[in-house]
Image (cartoon, rainbow, N blue to C red):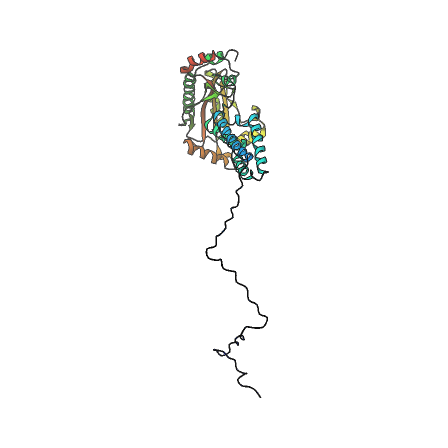
Length: 362
């Protein structure tokens, strides 16, 4: 027989598992709860002792800071040159040794790491590079030059040109006036002969020559404005006729006849002639160029005939158009320019003679 009372679960909800018997299941264990801290008991706090940096770490830190200050002082005092001296290199090796020694010790490792960071930021390479950039930007290259070197840099003349040669030649103002007269006469002759009109571009400019000892000379290089025909000149025979008329003017002024620079006969290789003027064959060149002077007179005349239509690549046309945009000169035509070097201005003559007296034997 089935006992109906035993076949039914005893619980508050239908389908719920039976409740444990009184006293729990046989063999069951309970996790023991941690004993509560008795009220009023004192809490003991354990202090972990701090590790103090040793003397070696401090020495490395102070040395790296002092070395950085020394580098900046050397850079400010003389640019990049003193930074790369042997003394500074030895000091850097000593500082590097101290840093490595500090890193190898437990108590000096932290300060050694800080010293290493300072040394990586401020060393011969980084500070020297900054000094070189500053010197390049300001034009100050004195460095640790001797007084004799600085004296040579201040030489007012140009190495290889004697004081007598400078004083005996025409002044800057005379050359400028002679050049203006020469170009005026050439323009007038070519206008009378061929009916050309002219356009001026640019302005006369001067710049000081280098003296050959690393400094700037009192002598100057002069470049005139440019005069270019408004009309194109594309016929090669006409270019030769223009050169012949200019030769007549030059002969009247005791100057040499025009010398062609766009020919291998000038001493330039055929490859270089082709690169500069478009072709080794004169008849196919986009630029003809002549030169004349009256040596030892410093005045030099340059005559160029620009004809970019003869350049199949279009490079000459683009170059001349860029020049036109920059200076306003015509893209095509015959151009006149005066250049003269190592000129002494009349207003500088007295000072030049005085300063040259400080350089006997130069």
